[in-house]
Length: 160
Image 1 (tube, helix red, strand yellow):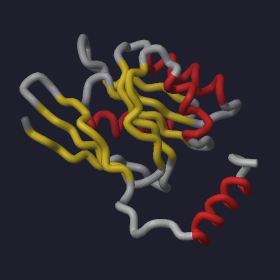
Image 2 (image 1 turned 180 degrees about the vertical axis):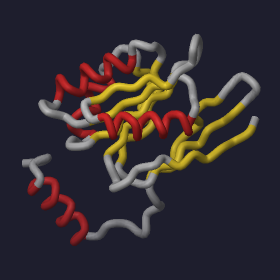
Image 3 (image 1 turned 135 degrees about the vertical axis):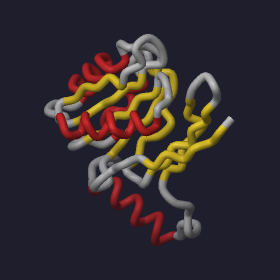
């Protein structure tokens, strides 16, 4: 087996959701889940088929985000993997809906950090082994950091 590190192209630090599913219907069900969860959501999604014609299937409400998702998934090249690129929403707004899509088996990450996908390749094909999401921690939070975290979450409306 060969191991590859595939960097995800993400201009401007957009929010991404990378996962694995099991059926061509994934791309349409992801579309329905996203537009049904956040009115006016801008996104692009791409899904790699694992059999048949083995195309990268795409959808979205923003053609450029759909093209970005497709380019990234073509580079990853792992069957039954999908990527959602969010333009005006955060993963916390849609992740539950994505997980409830019947075809979704696993979510590897939801992030706006620099992202690398660790891909294993055999004679049969390629599969996602894991991800590198962001950078390692620089320390452990102290009392001032805890207070700042609590204040931020309340300021942006995620906690009361």
